[in-house]
Image (cartoon, rainbow over all chains, first blue to last red; front, side):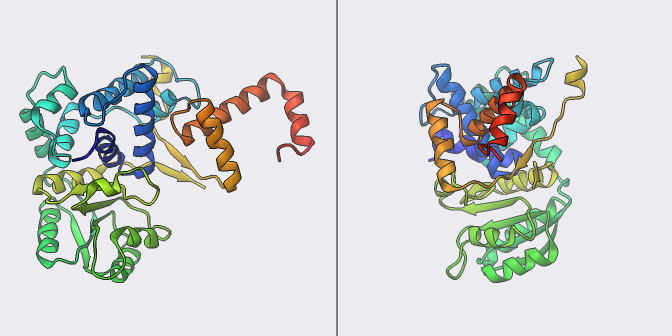
Length: 253
Length: 71
């Protein structure tokens, strides 16, 4: 069971397809809650996500630029807050939150959570156009992941079971997305693969792991997107489709 | 909708900076003393303060740089 902070981290890293930006926004959310005397309890997803929504909406609705270098200025530069459809879909299909909790997070909403999720799935269906590399040492799961990606419209350029092959595939194909199992055959993990290939090619990486809490602690080495095992087809589909369509933050040297 | 809102910069950029371990410690100390949300938030605030100082005390700021306090 993830804490509210870990769930928010999982959501925001996915939303931006970027660990660094996601984790930064998490810190701002928790800081804001603490500043307003509204401490977020470890299992209180509703307060955590509502604080995010409130903060983002406020920054976005300002008529002028927020003062430079403030947290509000950073929130403005993130663009518009996610829609209720997008939020419901990701919270339900990827994070596994229940309808009741989601309804409290997105309230007020004129549609039911179920309706919003269905709309989100329809929007995502067959819209994941991009090159994907799969890193998975279990053939049945690799084949399953491949079929999910292909059904969405993605092209799987290669499947690797070991870290070394994964690195060479990423360097060769420069994929739009990597879908990786955290634990691989051999000594290296999926994180090692990403660390080795990132200098040559930086793209979003979705990690599928049975222990999501261990890679949602806020450390530098952690992945952009985390999906818990056992995964659902809807969860992988929503995450893949989202990551292939999102505009990631740029890096200035 | 104002012009600023209409044309607002929508992109966030990551900026890489290199500092020594001891300098990170100084930033972290400043962060905790001033209750910044994160290390990055502390650095943003310090940039803001530096720019404010420059705009209010340009001569003194230039002197600090010339004297090698900042290079």
